[in-house]
Image 1 (cartoon, rainbow, N blue to C red):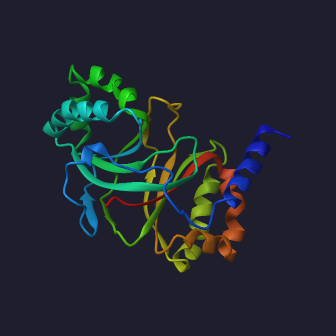
Image 2 (cartoon, rainbow, N blue to C red; image 1 turned 30 degrees about the vertical axis):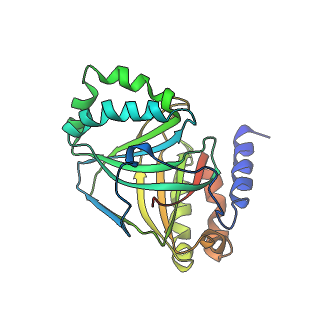
Length: 259
């Protein structure tokens, strides 16, 4: 059996094993950067313009790293905010269904431009602060993308969210796009909708291989059994093989708006 075929079978088995719901958090999430903020509103919305830089951070907090995280934020946030860096929203992870890491949350931030991000990265203090990340987090996976078109998102407290972080196969990656396009009618009938597809983000992490994914796909769901409903529909059954053939690996997380 070829390595490619083994990978395909593995992905097919993983996809079939996705549970019908994400019943409970694997961890209690408390993002220290937002610990002093007021309670989250009923819904969180943000809009970004073409050319702004979206940064999505999947954070896995170290159990003994709270003080290190507070120290990090105290030093880094003022520098970043000087360049227009801002926090947009946070989705807490209910369950990491398929993933080598177990993030507590996916948090959304933005830079006003690539130039602003570059100026921050060239601050002489930044390399020292960056090296301190392992003291506060078991992992920080950071996905950064300059927007090629305007983006508006609203996260609601009565909805649920999934993200698939995908590493397409260099030769057959178009199959993954065929899969997503093919199942969209089923997703809609099951109470879901694609809300964002982030392509070819830059990627950095301190505990994982720095192999950038090709796509992050966010879906909003009316209920936790939405994907189970999709798996029974003809569009899914007709396209599921394209998921396996199109990807080398992937992560799948269920999330909800931070309270």
